[in-house]
Length: 445
Image (cartoon, rainbow, N blue to C red; front, side, top):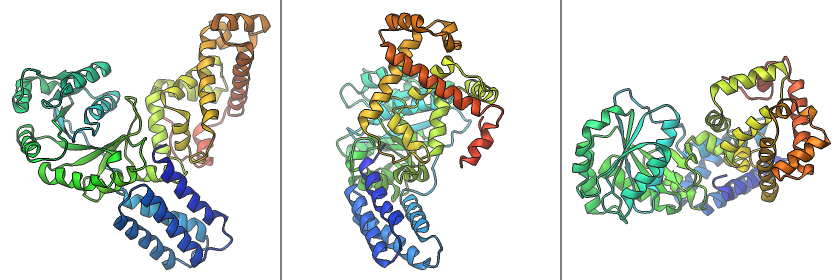
């Protein structure tokens, strides 16, 4: 979970309200101080923290007549935190005109080139034809890095190592660009936004005429993000922000709020080192996760990436018919693996967000899933589709072939039987109606 410390601190403060018998002025003041402490520790600007908590207190005092004061207080905190982070989700609308040009900006160490590869992968996964142009001619090995990353994800990359004029490099491949839906342009960085960088960006901006100009800011920059974002916005007309390295710093609160106040809204956040560790930034879902309420929209987005629409439809049919075998369990496990670490998935599930399970327990569970996959690879097709035929002799053969102890294969079969029992309970029932009863108001596609 991104910003673990901030989330834990905020949830701890709100839990005091849940346990309280009465909601009085003393409790309200404790709540305000707790929120202030949590946000300041996350490096959120003092002025912003003061303004936020003032609004929370004013709203709480205005609505003293509310029947469920505790729930209402939590609602106020949620709403004001969402407003602080930009309120509504700010999405990039890709136009039909080819190519849709996205110019990437940032200083050294911001994670700009890595973010380009993540964004390219993100849009490629959604059916867009993506191309990349490397114009960072100043940083040593920048061209090699962008070429290697693009090759890894199967995206065309245009560079020219013997040319030091970025405008000429862009012009050199101009006849190629119309074949792409989206074109990412990697520009040069510097240690800071200096005169030379501003001049180069302005020249490229005029020549390229990009549809979007995204500034990449590393989360560990903290409150300095506001000044940097404002500088790029004033000189290059930045239209949005990508925050990288959001998973590994306590200063991320400063980066998130600092960029929002400039008007250049956060479009994406990098939440890990892997190529698919990128999320479209949604203030409502983000705050919901921070407060332990889950983020169903992000969960469904991850699920769509992990399982095809055809497989989802097939699984829905199997749920309705009550059928379930080891191959289904195997596919479920593969999909879960694609969705990321269990800790991240749990944070997105309403009701489980914020539940603190020991890390060794979660790692142990992920380790079991890996072993179960190996064990299943040593089973015959008949054993996977009809696990009830697996007797002690077959168990010993599977164990010998996979190197997995018999006891752990028995645990796999136990997991299968529990899952099958659940599916039988669901036989003949409409999954959508069942989910709605549980509060999940969305359609299965």
